[in-house]
Image 1: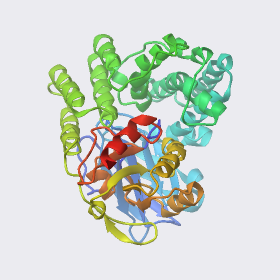
Image 2: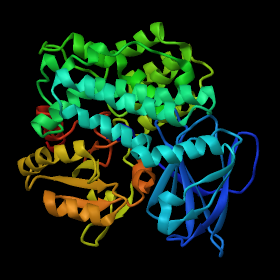
Image 3: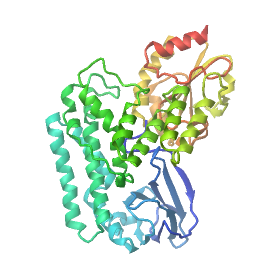
Image 4: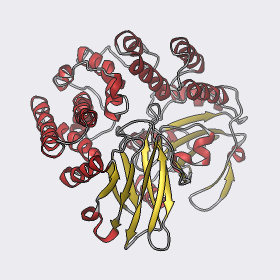
Length: 473
């Protein structure tokens, strides 16, 4: 899982303070600092949602200067100093001064320079509502309401934002106001489409949702087809196009127990190709493949990459998809599993190759991943089923925080071999295996080779146990 408004792999670096066209320049001074650095984080990848984090060390007097390249106007950027954060939406070419008193962080925020009008509007908005990300959390709260009430709550949330813009943004550029309105409008559309899932998660107290009633889909039916390539820089819009046809089909088939989702179903991609503007369809198709890579058999994934290549031969996303295809071949049936070293939770140094002669079920997870935690009861049953058999259950946590990992371990009481890949998404083991979403599983035979192209979850009924039984013979 990656969070719906999502959090993904971070490439951190300290940037050279150069200024060029398409660059945002941010400088100033921090008094009463609580850290020795300041950083900015933003998403510009339209496939995979991978953020960039660029930082600068503070000078002895608290001054700082950093710059970062920006491709798109009004990209949401988070500024972090210590544990304190704020957000702003600069445009390429902005040159801003921001002085901060870390003891009075929020009240001291004020920008000067090129782009200051929009940036100071962002400050007001942070104080008003907590920012764009807080709006996303707020709209998800509406999922606790009954189906006939949820849309009214979301409309009221949206109107508050529009009223705020009207009251505080009269002098701002027209294209900024269009972009700003779209952030919240498509955030509402996203929440309306996610309502059945979020609502039943709250009702059923589970991440594994079953039997969503037809009435839950009433708001999904109200979401319009509102595609616009000019809005692709907005995360909420990209989420919206990514789920529009899927959720519409669910609403149409609600109550039909014979209707099931399949990772091999690319009908949504075909609908997007026919009905969305070209760039939106391209981004959707690339994202769809990127998200499905770990679920598809290699021949099917290769086939779909070739279809994408035919339709979008000059796409900037082709290298990424071809890289995923190469990795798919690397972890395919019969390929040797990549060896790695690790330290167990009790301090023992080991390698994957130490388990040669045994079947290995490799599980990537994290304490903050709901679906991962939801699989753990099934994982316990799976382990119990193979107690004293020639199989090792190896759990690799990508928790960045060791304390969170150990706390989850104490609570879950899962047996097996446990280690933590402390680099998170950028950890050595996760990168080696191409893990870009969790939970992720790999089944390795006694010779140390991958046994399946796609390894099922512990909860997958007999599909997984049949494969393990065959390997244990």
